[in-house]
Image (cartoon, rainbow, N blue to C red; front, top):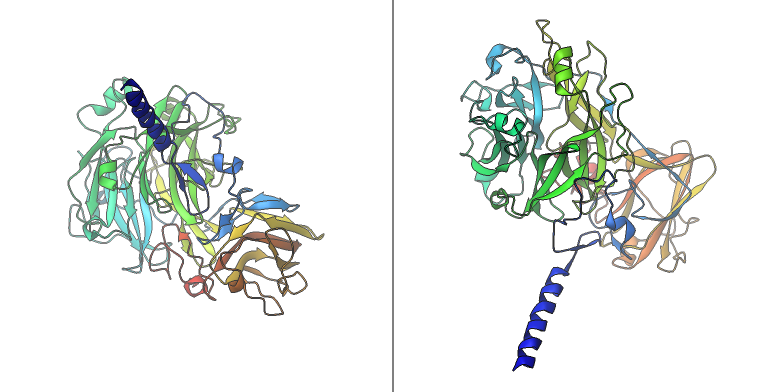
Length: 558
């Protein structure tokens, strides 16, 4: 009897161990544990986050979702091309959105002359053929809505509620700092088309937080069918301001990016859920990421760096992360000096939605640091991060001048909203000089038929050949057979003279070898359509797309 009981207990124990070690294979071949999110990160560590999937790369990488970007070595088996990271360019017409009259603001104080995103949300709504921007009117004022057809020219519609275009008034539901909004185009429940998390800074919550008696104010989540009328709030846990939300479509989970203050300063915690409402309980909350030793202090300010916020969105075949790096000075110093503190935006990339690779610590969108400029400091982006318009990516962001229209100066004064742009897929390129270079991918598989590239080879040439899994060039797909590419396009089809068709290689293990002279290669993908649709994600959307997936290719270019 004892032996039977012992055997049964052993089976139960082994079963538990096996359950804990069950793995899940992602869209790109990466294998993760089903015990997720991982509790592997240390709040005390200043070491850059380890990225397991770059140490244990799948033997074969499926490339059916999205353009394949070269932001890391995940896809690269061998190359002598040189990787170059690129920064966004500020739109010459900035700022595109400024404060107007006092009637816009739900809070009237010395900091009222601001219009800022506070995360907010900027999305393209294909049902309206309009860009929608949720922003904060006035310092910690009401959550407001503006509309645009082109991102550059915005109007404040009179919604017939609250103060014209204010959808959530200030007060119990404070929009400032935590007005993170998501346009959910894929939901089956149209009453929850818009989702939001809002800070509830009431009943002395902030004073308790500053006295270290709580983890911050409580937050509430809300739903709306049209972005105008919102549901009553559902309470989440406590967190500091600038807590935000995003959706990871690769794993079909909602993620809460929770601001957490630590002994090393501002940082982020993580919680996820398949169900947005149930996820608000934050039961699987874990410490996530902070600024690390590679985030160097500003040489003039000299304060330790902190991670002020982290937003994310699916773009093509990976997740983009905007890291708001806080450089200082301390709030008291900025308040006394009556100028904005400095935060700047840097980029990170993730292929599993949790671990971030940050190979380039250059500033992606910088504060000007110059008195009198509209974005002197306190630069931050938005929920949704990026919009797609043809050849370009567009990044909305807020900047603070520190100077109100009436000349009043302050740390949180004079905020407006501008735009920054980048070539499509343009975060990183693999570059060749006048001497020919090569890049060979790892073994990949696909079910498409047409190879496309994003390349600038106008002053040089690009050719591609296809190899079998052993590295042997396949007949009809040699470099000699390839039609050379001498162009500068973000979408261009590769063809072979002897009629080589990738359809014959569907679901087989192959490698691509790129030969490049005097040019830059940004991405490649295999499309099921001659129009070059990548079937990847397009961030917060854009004109020509009916949703968040590129199923149009060149047809969406305008």
